[in-house]
Length: 236
Image 1: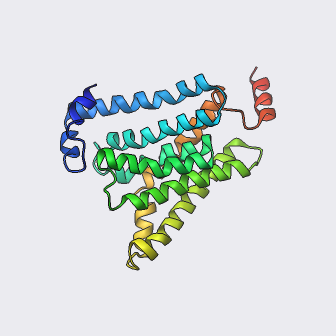
Image 2: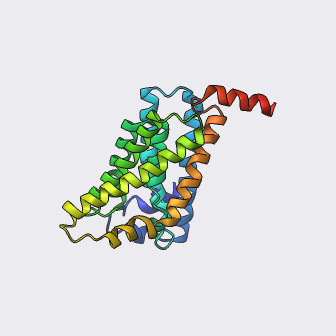
Image 3: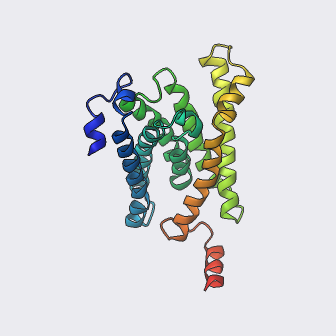
């Protein structure tokens, strides 16, 4: 309750940073974020099967993480730029729930976050909605159609293709539409690769680990049942 007590009254794009920059509030944000992350395996344990309703609820949880994670990491100087906190729940949503839900999460995540916290700022929000929507859509499509026989290969292929595809398409749209021809290749490379390199590395490490851990804990449907059964037999 400390988070809401400190921030609910001043939660807008002008006063939010000042309201949430206190040490006590920062600690509350970290605690609240960790509790939200802990809800994911809880929901999966309850649902077991990923029906449309369950995927919708998980998508709503990932949208909530798109609000909570930036609030937490913006306590770190340039944390939003360095770690790209919205990318992780959107990519995970696409991998777990599929392309349509990943697309919805990618579009609504920045929108809801901007309306509630002012992050991202309104002028940059459409670009982020397109970028993150593409991440969720492409990652879900690759997971749907690629069947390499190895879960880790599927996951990394989906992540890399989604990250590259989203960045390329968004960069083209920014150059042709949003930036009015003033958007350069150097600005694209710096904005989408150099400045956010720590976030890219974290996503490539954490997301496969989270997905594999959830599958091995039987909280997600097993992608390759025969391979999983053989691995369990060898472990026994």
